[in-house]
Image (cartoon, rainbow over all chains, first blue to last red; front, top):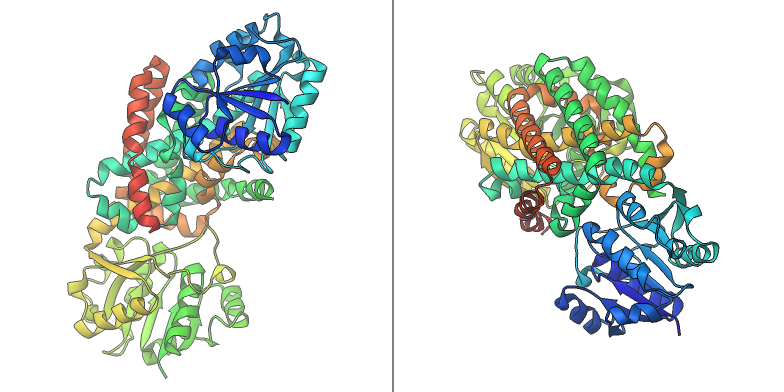
Length: 283
Length: 283
């Protein structure tokens, strides 16, 4: 029976465990530094048993789904102890640091840099569910550095999850994802913070917030434990995206201040084309 | 038969027209500067007839649902020509300027400053639908300046729409709504703009945007024709909220730059309490 070791049993690791077991009938062995997580995952039937590091040597697949700052070290350690046919992949939202860390590892070919783009604002094994990845996009970075059979197995796993896999290099991935994902989270957190500061009377937020505010601030419910290391691991790109964002806000603010209605209008009108792109995403 | 004149047949005016006809069996007479809107509203059965300014003198209710910058003038003009029992209300997202404009009008008591908090990112009569207002919040400003019977009739109309009405003064309203609604729109528009600028290859946005980006940028699909005058009419409060927002973004950026993981974490953790407030909103 295929043995899959999942290290990190949060939303992503847990949801993968559920669907890999379903799709492949594998035995799922779970590890997590947080003992409440392993216990909970076992109770919920997400994993078949709580494992130890010794299970890694016997595993057919090892999935690294720990917080972003721990991924490079954990992945490196896992690669030290795997069999030559074992597939190792991480599912982090930043790919440069892990790829860099293991680039000269003797078992580099066992590793695939994967980013399945899916998530919710909830976290922990209780948040895991079957179908999280269905019809979503999966990104594999630096595919030529992985072994051919290892890569094929990875593709099969993500096909079974009904994800569409695309390829890019790790640096490109980290740059784009800073804008399209990491910046969204920061803009949402800071919106939440700004509103909470000005509205010490929470009744006003409750009463006045239409669905617009609700959707814009949704990501401010996300886990600080997950996002703090992501922002720091992808620091360079995140800072660049934040600088651009702040610059655009300043410009727009100045135009409002000057009463330049035509320019304010035209900036918004130009941005409306995000509508068509998003319609593409929804499809 | 009760005659209701609706001036401005966009998403809000159109949706009100549909449900007022449904709830009260009134005759709905529509006016709009845009002849395509009146024609479309008639075709869709949103209004019973296309009206002229002459219909205002005969109306039992006049609803002003024009863009924010036109509301003060149009409301003032409407008040010049109404019968002593006619209810006039506007539904704009900024209340100070209109209340100020008509504060000494002989027919001030006929007017109620209303803000039913509902909307979508779509616009025009085609976007109007029954049920837009159901279970949403309605705000009435400066209620003591409206006549008693006029106010009662307003409350009845919004009760029939199944809205929960709360009261505040116009200045307070404009301040709070800048943070909870107007700032959300700007943060979303600027996020969309920033991402479009860095990603001239729209395929990358399409491929990498998870549901997080989609919800955060949703408001960037909103109508520039509606939002430009709102930002300018509520300039003072919008600028204040933007300054606070930019300040928070700068601080957060600096903490990431310094690698202050504990502070980054604690800011996000403190902001997580928006979750409970939003759960209240969802209920």
